[in-house]
Length: 453
Length: 108
Image (spheres, rainbow over the protein chains, first blue to last red):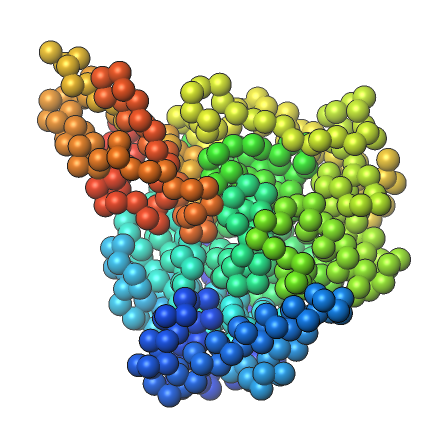
């Protein structure tokens, strides 16, 4: 059975500023800023010298980060987050990757198979995980001046061959975990570098914002992972926003599935349409927001809305997505105004304000951010969002924007015995309206946007 | 008589990186003797009726959620479990139901 996949071993490094440094480390850094304090204590008691130093530094850094943010919030000045590494006297030394093999059990982390600097193992899953963690580290270090997930060189732990027939990957708060797929519908999950970037970004988001993994804040959490995961993929290929495919999870499907990828940031709802899997249920506009208790309130579904907003900003501004769109999103993520309950509207305000702060009120960048959120139906103060065309007579009026899509059975969940997502007919209508809106807004070209209503 | 001690289990799995929803159901009324006994045993061991639902958003990112409904005679119990912290016995029940339904339908 043939499979379609990218071969990450042909990955070209990004700008390469740190590539030479990456192989220089000979010892492990166990900085684990997001572990509970009692674990850090254990490291300071029992670790080797470098581990003890790192754990202690991490505790100090945590305190200094919070103090800096509190001062910034009080004074209204920009937070110094991006200068943190230099200010704290810590030099980024490159990633410290630790790949383990769960040997098809559920035991974590499993057996160590590849540590930082070790040669290829010959196991594609382990080597893909190693390369993907490195590519993610490189994006954050080279383009956002962030030394690993916690900004303090935290070790990047990944486990492959988790469980049996496990068609999934996740971040468990401490490490990444990858399954092998089910050999039927899904390939192994290390095959797509954006999956790896997506999972690691959950660690960054947890550290910086703690977005609650439920409903809108959860969908925003998911969207940040898709956005930065996409940027990892583009960074590896030195690809500009206008040339990228903006697909998430390309290569995960086997040839049996009719679909290119799991999600599309360019066209939510159009990533796949398959007799077994169903149709991509993602909305691209607030009018089509899915209210459900499945999937933690639809976090992988409604992420389509902020995903599309990010895509619109990046393609409107053109060039490498991390330079401006990514920078705005990243600085917003680090803002003292981020909070665990933030939803789409709050983040739209925050990214708009961040763009204004970085580039000016009347800048091309601030306008792109405003337009993007407007196009997906998220209100930003001072600007009315555009409703979907499917609303007909209500176009131009402020609309609540929530539509409940709930099955009529007793279960409150969107249920289907055969396939994913919700009711087929309603989904098709939503996708059609979304396509109309995207065409009208000139979304795919990024230019020639229609004037707002 | 088969109707006595009838047990039905419905599992809806959602979430995961792919955000897909999978549903499966098994019922002792539709199973041969051995598999019906297996289902009853798994349900008993899982103690589903005594489990508390996981609070919304409490699971780890990109892990699965399982909405499990057990019908025993006329009594129906539902619980939402996170893949990250469900008892092993509940995990075994869920896995058996999902795999069993998949095999019967010839695919996933």
